Length: 391
Image (cartoon, rainbow, N blue to C red; front, side, top):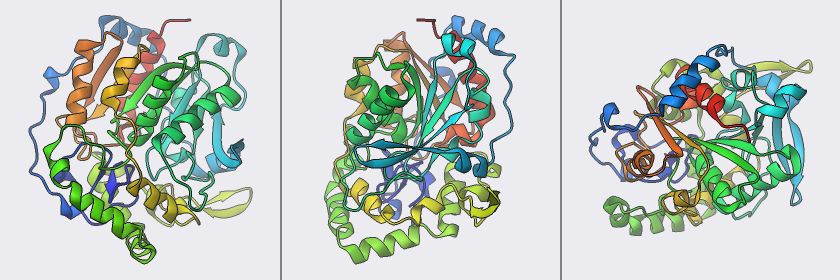
């Protein structure tokens, strides 16, 4: 999810009515930038998947959407991987893969957006694991991965983390699936790799950058650049940053943000933001997916670094370098990377330019399609995965 004051995945936006904000990348400035609702591109105008993919739906139809995993089960079975001296949290499901399936189906790596964590994929992992080994990862600075004090976060750092994880842990060509800023990290990884590690890409409402300084031919962002620089200056004052961060991670503020960016309000459940409790190894634990990691030491440093740091590579320059199969699944009610915003328009134009790219618009869905309407996502995703040619 995009978030207030420069985050791109839902846990810091406490000051805005986000459906009124139309912008390019992954973050917004709440009430400071308000633009009128923009015209939606008709669904009929969006390129659809090929007939071959539609036919593949028949063969993939035997796979069903399964019940979500319990967050406590995910937390209890996560593992740690040492990367450049930092502990990175990850999860594999199922723990033991079928050798026959492993010979044919590529593994999947799910990459969350800003402020989220592995458990944000809880509604997708069991369904995808029917035919693939599924890996999920907490990016450095999020979830249960390390949040080093003073670390300077960049999109390139996360992309390299993904590539090293594929090389050292998965050790097979892998399909990358990312949401929001996680999508952009996957795009950078695919563009920078030799493509021997990355098999294909699935992007859920891809971000345009790590923060609002990613300018993608949008006069609104250019106009407010001085304001963005002022915000950067203010957030580098520890007291101001701490105050804003504390406000942003309050439960009610988080819930309001999530309700504004999810089309399916029922899926804004207690496990996302409320003080829900669950049992793990006989102990009662907090299972908040969004809020709990925001309370960790180092979370404030990550918040400030991401907002005030460089926006990172632009997907408009990166996508032409990628010849892999790409599936775009885009929620049409996304207030942060709308399909008729600069980034959305660019991605919606790709299927007509690149035969390797397919796009599906998901009606009534917000910025996090995989958790918002997993049923619609699986309906499009499973046939597409089944249609990937065997290498």
